[in-house]
Image (cartoon, rainbow, N blue to C red):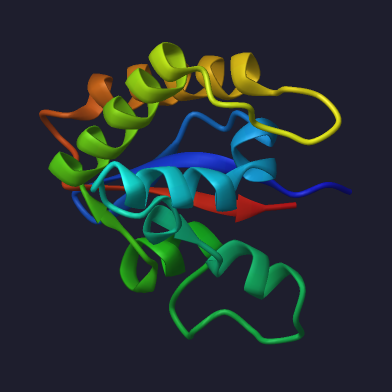
Length: 140
């Protein structure tokens, strides 16, 4: 099993995802965090939530009254306000497309990262009027 990121938005207290594995974004999350900080954007890792990973790799039961990790994440997870999320995603995409940084040691995953950023940005934009927050859930 590999770890990936899933893009989520929070709408009226509910966590909603497109359910797409974002392997390149997960693989390069630390580099994207460094880039986002250099660009004076919200830190990439500030949008990454480990609620799902925590409950799926431990014996800890879900809190009483909650039936899924999505419900726990919606209430207690790490979220980025939509405006900051858009700034982060747009800023990183512009940088990756225009400055063409190398992403990866053995192979350059720049195009895969750019593709995943475009897809996530389209997903977020489709919810911008209804959602109040965004995150990437770390899932396996």
